[in-house]
Image (cartoon, rainbow, N blue to C red; front, side, top):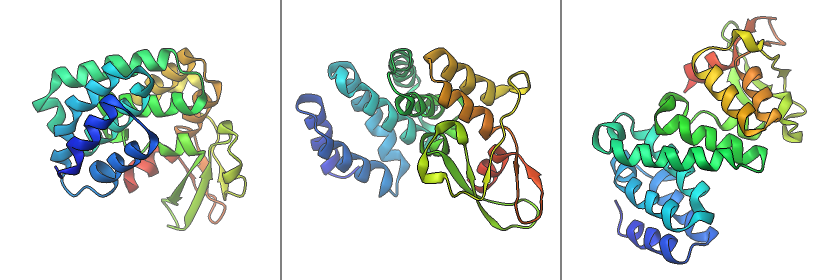
Length: 217
């Protein structure tokens, strides 16, 4: 962990601001070479969530990313911290006021142990689509999740079609139910689309976007 990280965490506990969060993301995640540094920061992020309620979403979202990046080390070394972070994430999800907060908090819970392999891969639900490759012809594709309504993906190569609710299982079912219970129809729909089907416009192959997301990592 760099010398800057404790200083940034201390600032977030006492006088948080967006610039400090951006710097912490850079130090611990975007530019971090050692996932262990992120694991060391989890207890301090829990303190931020506890003592700065207005910063709780930011704290658990970063914690979820760090946990996913280092999994299973966080569960092995700090199970109680993870459970407390999950409690905060669940509380924030229950009170989430926007679709984007709902998506971020579901991603946080995934990374904090619900399905760590998805903790760093849920961005497409937040952003509105994914850049993937066709499993058959290997062509690059942009796949839009229409339920998000994000205009940035209107020119995507293909739209994902939603899976029937009754076909959702495992992580897909959990994420869908979490979105429904939080009142976010957009995120719930995007989850169904992520785990539904898309068609390659180049070779007409049908594929499940979620399977390609996991395969490409």
